[in-house]
Length: 268
Image: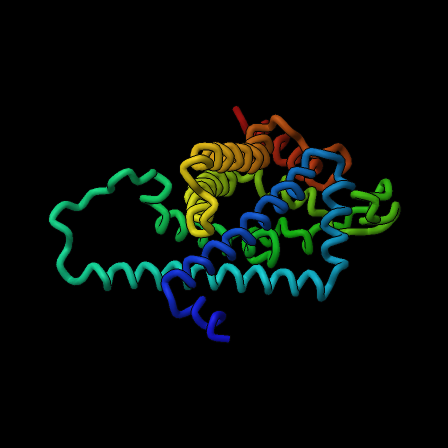
C-alpha cells in the first residue's frame, strides 16, 4: 500500500505514472490508427469493425473509462511535476534562461499537450458523441446494409445483410470540410511531437535508455512517429484533396456528388 501511495506522492512515482499511462495511450492511438485506415477499404470493412466495437457494450465502456482514467492521471502527473519543478526553482528566475541540448519536442511538450487535449475533446464530440457536425454523425445517417460478412483475424465482425451505422460515410463527410481536416492535420502533427518526446521520456524513466541503446531507441521512436503521422495525414489528406473518393452507392458518395454538382452549376 505504501508503494502504491508513493506513486502519487513522490516525484519518481509521478514520473512512472506518466510513463505507464503514456505507454497505454501510445498503444491506444496506434490501434486507433490501424482501425481508421480501414476507411481505404470497402465500406463493409470499417462499418463492420465499428459495429463489432459497438456490440461489445459494457466492455467497450469499461475500456473507454480506463483510457479516460489514464488520460486524467497523465495530465494530473504532468501538472504536479510542473508545479513541483517551479516550486523548487523558487521565485527568482535563472540568470540565463535558455534550453541546453533540449529537443524541439521537449521544449513545447506542455503546449502540444494542451492542443492534443483540445483535439481529443473535439474528436470525441465529432465521431463519438456527435455534438460537432451533428448532421453527418453516424446516428443521423441512414444505416448501411452489409454487402458481405466481415471478419478480422477469424473474429466475425458483422454478417451479410446486417444494418449497421454508416461510419464510412461519416468519416468521408466529416473530412470533406477543409477547416476540420486542416485542424486534424495540425493537431495530429502536434500529437506526434508530443509522442516523440513522450517515448523518449518513457525509455529514460524506465531505465531502458543507456549509452549503448540510446541511438537505436531514438531512431525507433522517430520512425514510429513518422509512420504514425503519415498514417493519420493520409486519411483527411486523401479525402480533402479528392485522391480517394467514397465508394459508389454509399451515402457519402451521393451527398458529396450532389454538393459537387451544385457547386459546378453555380459557377458562371
